Amino acid sequence: MKKLIKSSCSVDKAVVAKSCKSVPGAISRRTFLRNSSLMAGGAALATTVSPVMMKKADAAVAAGGKAEQVKTICTHCSVGCGIIAEVQNGVWTGQEPAFDHPFNKGAHCAKGASIREHGHGERRLKYPTKLVDGKWKKISWDQAINEIGDKLLDIRKTSGPDSVFWLGSAKHSNEQAYLFRKFAAMWGTNNVDHQARICHSTTVAGVANTWGYGAMTNSYNDIHFSKSILLIGSNPTEAHPVALQHIFKAKEENNAPVIVIDPRFTRTAAHANHFLKIRPGTDVAIIWGMMWHIFENGWEDKEFIRQRVYGMNDVMKEVKKWNPAEVERVSGVPEDQVYAAAKAMADNRPGTFIWCMGGTQHTIGNNNTRAYCAFQLALGNMGVSGGGANIFRGHDNVQGATDLGTVQHPARLLWSFSGFVETLVACLGPRLRMGQGSVRRRQL
Ligand code: SF4
Image (cartoon, rainbow, N blue to C red):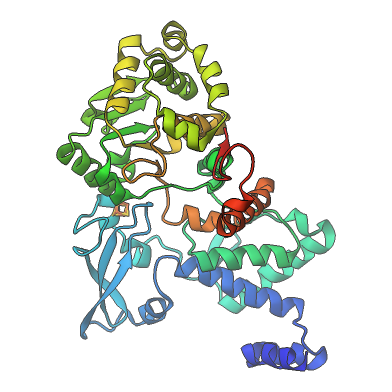
């Protein structure tokens, strides 16, 4: 215990010494808030630029000096393009796209080309400000931390820890997300979340409930192996521009048909072989409609389903109700288009299934994502290179921040536990296999 106390005192002697003296091993509430606020503030600032660069940026007036090249990553979208930053006297002076990066290979989109603005844009908040008599006044970090800390402690005292909501970010690194989540826990609440609540949480629920883990199953450059590409609620031409080069590579080199399902004729739809213009929110109807043709024509992967899938019979019963007339009535898409899209996917396997916010940001987002998963299972497109559920995220670390617990979901613990049990059983071998087949099977 003594050792522990000693080590906690040695973490930051100047800050902790006072509290360590009075109560061995304890940190005062003020010190806790001060350190935590520094951590949270620092985490936000460090999201785009490394601490070293942030510190040196104060020397912006000192022009000249040797330029060094620093490898970094674009933080705008989930493609994660590599960037070579040119840094001079600690100031980010120029940039080039990384030619040796496996995702962008020397390409950049307009958003990535403006990434330096994160570091020194004119409108960037660079120091704490306080609204005094209607005007924003610059204040010191000490004043800001003390005033905010005191205010927060007052709120917690009068209204309890659950009265404060802690909003993290999909732009935080894994480490920052972990610390942010811990901060909320130490504050005493589970009221912590980040933007994946509206974009990614429906995917997590739909995908994890289907095959156990709520994440993109393949990768951008694995799309090179796809023989067909289906995009629903996804417009990478604008949202993930550099991702399109991977889609086009498969389209050109594998002659892969591109199927776009969207209520709008997007810039991505302009490149499609098949465009299905659905009524907004009718994703399940169109997917069941395509599966109707797949089952009617016996195009499903029977052996894959036999070996790897539970519950497809129930899905088939449901799909049976979605005949072409009903699908057209609900989604607005005529039978010939639905048939052609289903056939293109069936004839060209493995095919990738890409979705984005257009599929998830619905009150029925979970239903949509589960239907997408069922479609891929029916065609046997899972567990193969070139197939899978390629779920393009909006930010650079939606998955990491979510996995580190910044998104709260009561079922997460359950999934983690079931994942642990599966791993354990898989490691222990066939003796522990359960039911009619392997534990890798999932109930649809
Ligand atoms: S595609 Fe995404 S990661 Fe790449 S440069 Fe554009 S915004 Fe940045």
